[in-house]
Amino acid sequence: MSVRRLHPNQPKTFAFTPQNSAWAQETIAKYPDGKQASAVIPLLWRAQEQHYGWLPEPAIRVVADMLEMAYIRVYEIATFYTMFQLQPVGKLAHIQVCGTTPCMLRGAQDLVAVCKRKISTQPHILSEDGNFSWEEVECLGVCANAPMVQIWKDTYEDLTPDLLETILNGFASGTPPKAGSQIGRIASSPSAGFTTLTDKTIYAGNSGSNQES
Image (tube, rainbow, N blue to C red; front, side, top):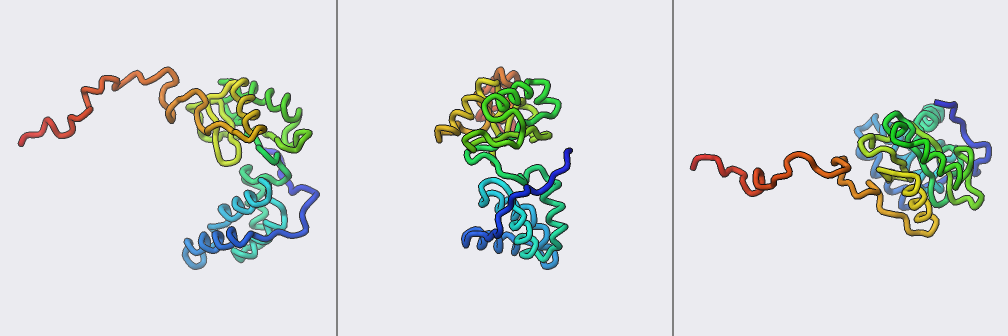
């Protein structure tokens, strides 16, 4: 993993909105006394969501103060996890392309090529209109439906280059497609349809029918 550093251009301050501040206090209260530091990841994530999809340095200090943690400890967490974006991202969508083996074998580099052509030739660089950015990341946990990408909290699976272009166009027009498989697959079921237990008569309505009365 490459070295991750804070962006040189930072806002002067950060403060949670009243709604997010109340949510943060409720989240902290879920942990036992002395274990409040366990709330650091959800609080950093909420700060990132509030600040246009990326995590500024003042937010790191705010979260550290709320949890009575040393600044360096929260900085270590923010720079370790790639879920935290340390520089501005696209206003409409930041695309994380999974590049781990299953996705790579099923065409992840073709998805990267789409991002390079439609957004920027280099990762973490905003598109000309500032609406999109992209990066390649490690496993996002949807290996059975490879290749896939994650945009904000949602995953888009079973992709082809054309399907990814459709997704990007949807975000650009304000009508992003439904998350999940883009070929209609249910969860991680076989892409060609079920191959076992297809005879419903062997299990439908037979619960307990073989038990003696």
